[in-house]
Amino acid sequence: MADDYDAKRDFDRTPEPRGDTSSSDDDPCFVIQKHDASSLHYDLRLEIDGTLKSWAVPKGPSTDPSDKRLAIPTEDHPLDYADFEGTIPEDQYGGGTVLVWDRGSFDNITEKDGELQPLDEAWKNGHLLVELHGEKISGGYALQRAGSGDDANWLLIKMDDDAADARRNPVSTEPDSVLSGRSIDEIADDENTDDESGDDG
Ligand code: MN
Image 1 (cartoon, protein in one colour):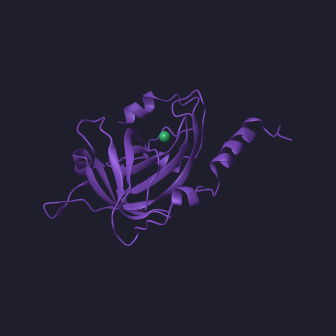
Image 2 (cartoon, protein in one colour):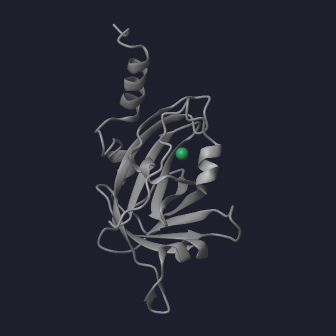
Image 3 (tube, helix red, strand yellow):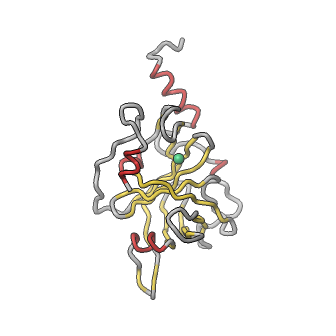
């Protein structure tokens, strides 16, 4: 819940958004943020029910349907977080540099008994199918909870459709931000330069 997000953060210290935007009528959005924290991972976030449902994917998304990528559920993030790129201080929760690795809209394609199942229901049931429209990642993905209980891990699996491609590896070949074109190192350096207010000669 959003309360968990607030409780973990000191907004006087972290540049992350407090987040008070509510959802719009537009298609729901997704973001995948590359997060160079104590261990590098990719945070997948899907707009569901006015918040960003979130998973940490250690290896990032695959475009190969035969890969099953571990997706560890994390706390809901506010919708504003989808634009966040920057460096969280090391002594703060999630300390490290965040880069918007991919983003776009998505369609819910989860069906139950031949009918489209609402996203929030699909999420609660631990099985959702989405079609992502990103710059690097597109097509169908299954998110499947691999156990019972709120702490159970999930799996992120590419569906076998036109966008599936076992030869692509965008996590390594397309590492930079779709928002600013910067690399993780450039974002980290930019922030350090700001802090030293020009004293970087
Ligand atoms: Mn993270």
